Image (cartoon, rainbow, N blue to C red; front, side, top):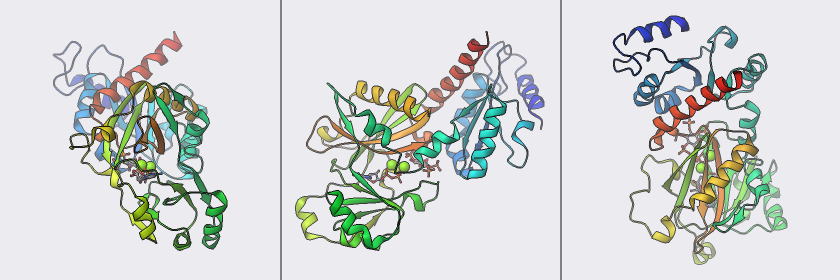
Length: 340
Ligand SMILES: Nc1ncnc2c1ncn2[C@@H]1O[C@H](COP(=O)(O)OP(=O)(O)OP(=O)(O)O)[C@@H](O)[C@H]1O
Ligand SMILES: O=P(O)(O)O[C@H]1[C@H](OP(=O)(O)O)[C@@H](OP(=O)(O)O)[C@@H](O)[C@@H](O)[C@@H]1OP(=O)(O)O
Ligand SMILES: [Mg+2]
Ligand SMILES: [Mg+2]
């Protein structure tokens, strides 16, 4: 169905309503914000849940699927384009569309997304920021990039002076399961078994809990997740080898209700996270992302960012439907203001 027909159909759906829709149609007398989306079927299922679409409709936001087999400019008109698809070709289509349609907000710009899809650069802005204030200090673990030749790893690790154990992560994040397959290495010689390109990152003990900070425009939401347990000096001296580990922190079950050591479970100070989020939003040029942050075990205020993800699993973020719809509306309004 053509977009304008779809809007008319949805508006007709609630003839009895003045402003707020009950019957599933769009509210009358309200400017409709049209959000075109290009997402994987997995993402559509986890993100575009009925509770989001329902609330959005009530607020005058309509989600419309982008048809990838047709030119983007022939579709819409859109106010906002929401996307998470991999591939150079798609990035170019979006870039061309952004040039031709500066009036449309593309969330987010392909170049900025590309930057966080490479673990060599992903955390660079956090390191440059060097955030340190009365609430704490935020850094990144020391890391080394190995592009090829696994036999050179032991030497490279000692030259760089990295401390074991190390987390080995595939260099590129491309949405595949493989790009999330990490290993923990107890000795540097076993690292020769791994397949570059990869990043070797110092493992930081953090009491087995990490904090996921979800960012949606100016809003932030923090949740606890289970993570890898600490590695003691004794354990390190007794073990050798590299061990693959699953996506521990991705589990649907959150650590928010678990019976945890309060020193480990205490959320990072809000003002520190606000400052970090504000700075990263600006430096990365992204509005939709999350970051994984850990507290060094035994400290109160020493934090490390270990991962940044573009358009993460917002479906798991509490109250995401309210936060997201408010954000989409705020974009529509600021655009309206600019035009006046
Ligand atoms: N430097 C580190 N020190 C301690 N633990 C780490 C470190 N890096 C990663 N981890 C652990 O490994 C997990 C996976 O690492 P990371 O978050 O970088 O991978 P990812 O595949 O990008 O994850 P996501 O599913 O969040 O995208 C983390 O959630 C954390 O439990
Ligand atoms: O699938 P989930 O809901 O877990 O979302 C995960 C998301 O997968 P999806 O984009 O395919 O949904 C991942 O994206 P890719 O790196 O693989 O592109 C990454 O952003 C994870 O960090 C997200 O987990 P979260 O950080 O929110 O726990
Ligand atoms: Mg992570
Ligand atoms: Mg990640």
